Length: 143
Image (cartoon, rainbow, N blue to C red):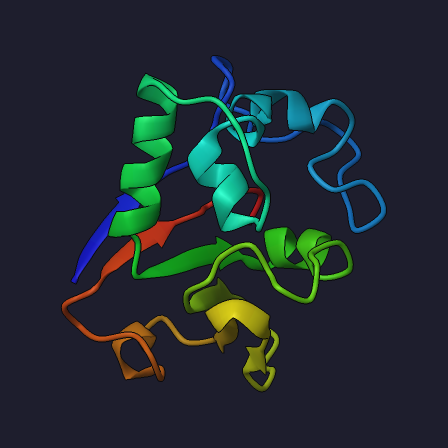
């Protein structure tokens, strides 16, 4: 299994703004770091939207989305996203949530199932839909 990290980060090391939480995902002004991706054709298509920009940024988004076989995130990112993601969550692949709080897997529309990993041993390859040959994208935001 290959693991790579894909995230937007500020020059001073932040990936969201202050005062983040479920009612304020990514915190105050936090979406500014990620606005570049929202207009890209590849990202928009993955969200069921049409149109968008093409070019080098779009090529990067397209490559990352094609490469990722699963996603990893921290519990805080999950807690911010859970009440805000649509029923067809934006990942379209298995998502592994690193947490101390056990929870049953949570399947969503579009091929996303959230798996809650509570031990230090890697259970990623044991989860349904994630083979050991797949590539895992580490969305290590605020988690």
